[in-house]
Length: 184
Image 1 (cartoon, one colour):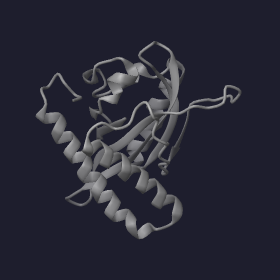
Image 2 (tube, one colour):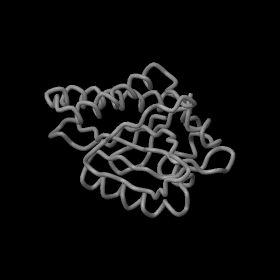
Image 3 (tube, one colour):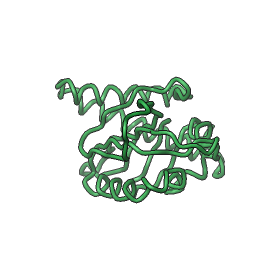
Image 4 (cartoon, rainbow, N blue to C red):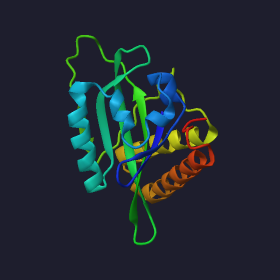
């Protein structure tokens, strides 16, 4: 699932996989509405963690529980990279992804996050990105994580620019649709 968030943290776009996963309309996720699907025990940590990431304008990876359409909760990994634009590299917001992850039942898990590091989770087979642009954004996020990990740092400026453009295009798609429909 792909998402776009403004500099103030308000979500402006979620891909159609959001509705398939949560059973809720995409417009319920905008701004901070998506937090209603976060497990109550993880919500406060998520809000504090994301506020810190936003204040630092840092990449992040976050593991927490999210309510599925059937009412059960699943562990998900959420990760995002910041987007900067002119003038003066002003902070625009985030382009990110969320995917369900499966852990062994015996693993004791707690919600957890890491600032300054985005590690893209593997795409869950049940929720592949929908449109071509969403697939491009997903691959750019994965490429960014791999470059960060492998040390080919000269590629980072190019990838960050491409991520910024993908985020802008996704936001334009969202604006082009009717105000009540935030997916396609």
